[in-house]
Image 1 (tube, rainbow, N blue to C red):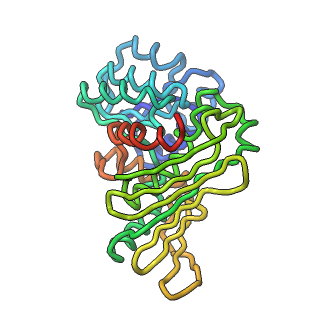
Image 2: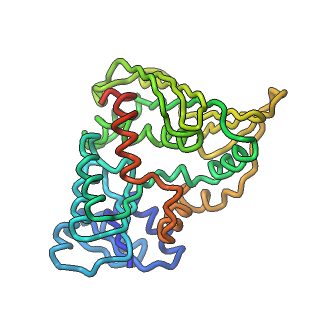
Image 3: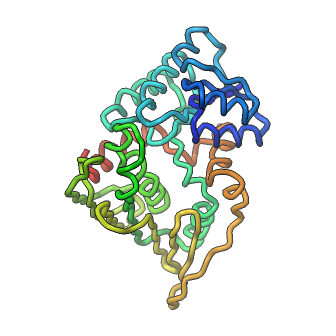
Length: 312
């Protein structure tokens, strides 16, 4: 038995995958409307009233739990599950609402000897997996750059909890940043700059920086939430430039050529399901954690790099 916590959009994506995998699961939600829609769409038991009320009924410990609640409820939900004795959790990114909450979650994970993995689904894109193969064959990444510009003109009007808006860098931009560092190596040195701020994200709005990764690749980044732009990652090996623009696709440029060509990948799962979610969920259920970002990994990235990059 698997529990899905939450009945919103992300939880429905997980339910779709679990159905395809023929896994038994239930969903625990709060809002009657979402619970009713979830129950109707997936024909599974859907618990109303929220996680805390459900835990008071002393249900048996499940095989694993997938947490798909909003960013503002991530910390509270994870702590409740860990205190109940849940030992295997797939946790929606970024794992916490505010960066300062990561220490308490990480310490409890260690105390309970639990496996809590962050759901950075782009690590499981077909395009990313293919890029890793090319990088390995080419002898590694020499340098890389990325951009995580967010579309402020749209985001400011979204009906979001203020926790999500105020921590948009952590909750959304790290989709790009995590993927870039996953492919090119986490930083071992980083020089970061930021300035500005927006009514919905007061900490910062313009970003730039550079550094050296653990793989000794040089990297740089920039983003400007006050102007136009998009998400982009480019990685350079001795033979190829690998381009993610958009992130779901992979393009390649050969040394000695200016032509940029698409790389054919088997992406049928990324088309049938939300990209990366099928393989991510299947891998989590099987207990292979090698491709995941753990809570401890996330704590390290937040405290050493994400706070420095964002101004949090």
